[in-house]
Image 1: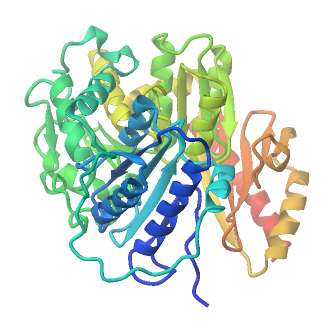
Image 2: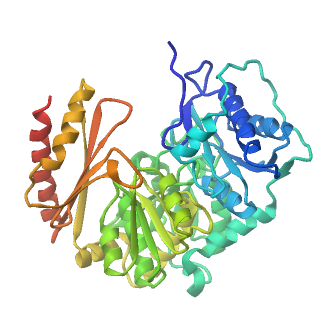
Image 3: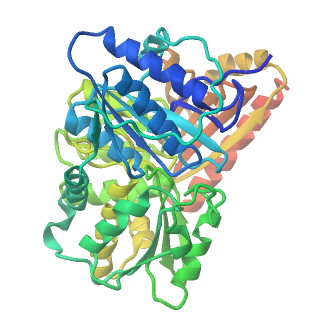
Length: 507
């Protein structure tokens, strides 16, 4: 029996192809029809749906098919003819007070994948309960074949994204966090940027031209092509060292300070810093720490500000927040939960991040990760720090010296029986580490329920349990504090020994 695609943590995603186990027009029709019935069930008022897409295989065709089906059913559609960064789709929903958003993207997955992300009227990705409500209106999946040369039907229900919309977003991103107030244009910093063949191609060059003097920024030219095959970035993931190869070639002999990449839908940023004549990659936690701490130090985040971070991300930012009277919210994995916290609490001054290289600085612009905001923030921060003769790596060291060193590691264990995972879950809270536990939190009993457990030790080091959900696998996320980097690394080794011995008992 063939497996059907279903909604995961970020919509529906799969390899393009025929049949129910592949993403195709059948799913577009199923979801579009469900959206029509769902919106019409609410009230009689006119409805508006924003549709965006990236540059992947079938992204254009799927977006047009969605638009045609919705407008045929008298649903207004705001359609972007250009490829759309994910945060721009979220921005359009906020600006135009849309009822729903559709984004055709598979983020940083390989070229054969595509996906469909859905957004609510608050501009964040649909929550599980909202997905369940929408799915009540889904008809049975059936395959649709022989659709050729699909064209956008122009009618009174179709509205195109305007140049004004694009300009508004660009101007607001340029002024993110008021970082540009003391600098007309950056002239003391040189960077290389790459969109990895993706949606950053349109917005980011315009923004760089506004914030840098001519000659201060270069592009990895081979990546500056809208290419659904990702020819020169086969694995377009900013977490991977190999995506920087083309940027490093471009940077050779050009006195470059910083390499910046955005993933294909521009919601995650990768950073490499020139330090001691080599480029050092920052991970997602480090990038978020630099941006957040700099903005705290410069009084952008004050009292009545909030930090929101995912369960498996670095707790160091939360510790900095507590010392600076900034409210802290911890949520399960998935940026939809971050958007939900912003909406439910009417938060205006927010820094939100996940360890997987995504963050949000200005929630008035988007309720999803926004790598374009990060590109601007990192540019201004690196420029200001260079005036003090330090780079981002040296600034990171200063933060650790002030607040303590934190080192992280994620370890995975696979099993042949789900029952063994249940036994590990039940016994994990009883584990004894190198010092006593300060807090044990089981997220099954939290307001946002999730199958995760976090143990916090007295020194604020944390060990988190998280099962896969789709296969017999467990991940443990370790964050260890130390007065020195070596002390933090030693604590990680101690924690790993305890976990290895513990898991071995159940194999």
